Amino acid sequence: MEPSDLTTRRNGRQRRVPGASTLSEHIGSMDRGETSSPEPETEEEADSLIRSSDTENRRRHRVRPGIRGELGNIALLLFLYVLQGIPLGLAGSIPLILQSKSVSYKDQAFFSFVFWPFSLKLFWAPLVDALYFSRFGRRKSWLVPTQYLLGLFMLYLSATVTSLLQSEEGPKVGTLTAVFFMLAFLAATQDIAVDGWALTMLSRENVGYASTCNSVGQTAGYFLGNVLFLALESAEFCNKYLRIVPKDTGIVTLPDFLFFWGVIFLVSTTLVAILKRENDHSRGRRNVPEETQGVTETYRLLFSIVKMPTVFTFCSLLLTAKIGFSAADAVTGLKLVEAGVPKEQLALLAVPMVPLQILLPVIISRYTAGPRPLDVFYKAFPFRLLIGLEYALLVWWTPHVKQEGGFPLYYYAIVLLSYALHQVALYSMYVACMAFHAKVSDPLIGGTYMTLLNTVTNLGGNWPSTVALWMVDPLTSKECQGAVGQSCSSSLEAGLCVKEGGVCVTTMDGYYVESVVCVVIGLLWWLWLGKRMRRLQEQSSSAWRCRVNQ
Image 1 (cartoon, rainbow, N blue to C red):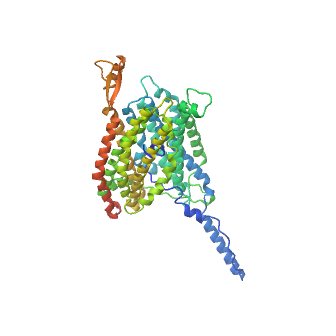
Image 2: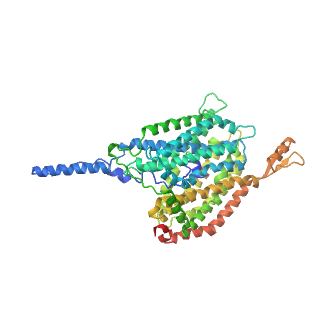
Image 3: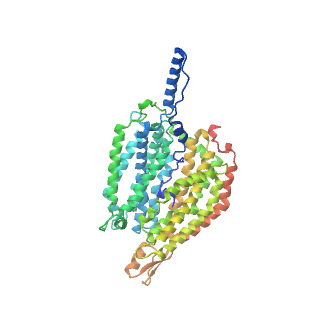
């Protein structure tokens, strides 16, 4: 279970620790005590002192305007990032809902393509940067239409999602995938526009708050669309904790939730389009120029970076490094739901992990700040492989501990501890990778370089997860018991088995086969390619410089 599955769906963006970039600015903008000075002896000296004082005051006011004058802009950015997290959280909740309806793992694999757009947004980001209506605004040209479309898609889903999930033939996974893929694509496009707007919406002294708004806003939006929605949608959770008189449904339904946020998207986008101007000149703000690189030049630059031998080798390693973790990360949560763990309880386990996910990057960065950050990646790798085996053991143990009233408290404590250990290993590798990206990126094209490496890192986690989900069913063996001459090798044959009075019994769960195979592949990668990745740290800085700049 990646942190992106429960919190932020890491977008390939390297985030700074909130507040770290603005601490010195906060100290510098504190009220200063006045000091007495000797009386001026002449009128000329007095005029000189007055002019000097006025100049200094104007300079201080211009350089350090403080955060109070930009609270409105910060609130707007925070709100836009919250909106961005809503469709991502909803998309993350759908696999758990589908699993409770006993869809196949091939269907789950197909739906997992919904989570790809944020990893691929680098390929259309240059278009968002270069094509716009200058009269309407560079960022609003993309922000307004994408958020209108997000709202309209949500309204469409609010009217159709019940039929898509509860049709007679089973959930219509293809249609659900298409619609939620568009939601994720639009959210990724909105993210590109908001990230760019943040650079000019805030003054240079306060632009560090943009990363804070991103982290807090997107996490809050994902929480609302995933954890809170699953809890309020569950009749069992609502009857147990929130109601006096039990009912058959939760407090919130998926159509109601989609309709509410669809309306919020449409209304808020209209207000932003009408009331908010780009590069506002109020309060002495100046028009911040933005450099626009041509689309063709950007794609040519990306291709030049990838062609470099060191970068090509590193990208190849990033694309294969997470194969060993794919079964544990992609399938374990679904297997727990299949074993009877309530999906809302599983989602709520993410809440106590938030403080740990905030502290871990701060702690781990102390060990990745040196010249060899990938040493941390290498050391955490086998530890994370072992956690994958522990996850498989946890799934096997789950049915044995289930009671009539659900699962005991100690079971959830063990699940929480397992997830916490997983987060330690995952963040150790993640922070080490981000540190190495920052270390080797060519400073002349640092933004494009970093984004490319982060994109490859995310793709290295997406494709193994999709393949792992896809392979669960083919690796699973079932037999028909109670009906002579019948089998359960396909859904049609399983239906015939049940029709003849038999029962399909799983003799070998493909998840356990996958878990062992993935750990073996991961161990071989660590012994062979892991050492090769560590040796990349010995390359000189010139080996990472883009040929365009030489």
